[in-house]
Length: 429
Ligand code: PMP
Image 1 (cartoon, rainbow, N blue to C red):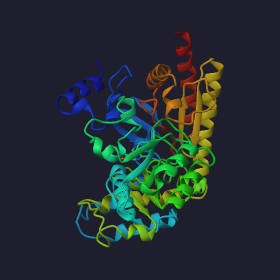
Image 2: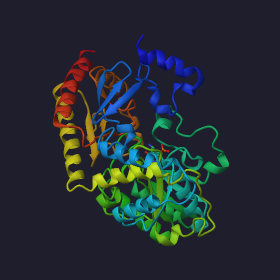
Image 3: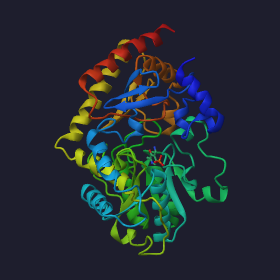
């Protein structure tokens, strides 16, 4: 029995499923999860000292690699001043100024502690601002586990076959209208019918929780147009894409401006942080300025702000995102070439610093139905073979992969060599 398997058994005694977030459990992957001990740059090291080239990056935040010395240094520097005060601190203003400068559609921003809190608060704000109850989301988009948004969601909810969770009251879920991603006609039709009742559309501008699905040209533009026509707010959930697809997020990359933006992951540099922000007129409806309530004991935590600021500052290095996208390109092309050589049907899709692998004979995947039609068994075999080779991919066919600037050409080459052998083992079956 491996040390990880033993630790997993122990964990299962008092932690549901042995994990504090479901996707970590390796459900359906034929083996217990690997327990990690430490991480550095592009690598994770497990409890037995085995090294893995990591393409999860703590699910997104580690865009400059694990244990970035500048991020750790910023936290160390702040540490002795105390962990939390429950008062305003100047570092929160520095963070707000930085976010507003990097993402021009954000004129005011409120810090929270997770992506879930960010989307939950943004939806409440949209409802409060418009005085409407209905919200529109897309099948397979995951916006955290807040009740209103846990309807036909992706990520762990999808892996576990429970797109809609028990515990979400039907009377609440009925206000959530779910449409197919990349289907502008469905959006137009929905708004023709109930547009005047819709508080907001919330969307992952690049879907990253049903694998990686970029928007088709015109899709995000249609969302903007119908929101303008019917007085609804457009919320971009950029928890995953923010500062990753481009410096200014997917909204900069695709040039579509939302009313509100949700952030998480990178903005905290690996600490528990989220944020939501947008048009001043809307944000002024939040307490204490306005009547829509939102609060947090640890929100704007100074240590977390210091980590996030250090990371955001690093990303401003000229050419950072172009170089990152180039690495993703090299990896994805290399994987496609090796899959083709082995006669395995696999394609990749990508946007900036994120990517997805699809085991399918189709030439592209644009929505939930197509993503779930891919060969899950082929993914499982590839994932397992890669893990044995020392390459850590997300343990689910429905999660995006993340590249960091710490992934050197040698790491990509190692990954491609491992993939060649993994595809060969898949072929032999
Ligand atoms: N929105 C998106 C797009 C996400 O990818 C996630 C998490 N993966 C969330 C919201 C929820 O964030 P958190 O897990 O920090 O609550």
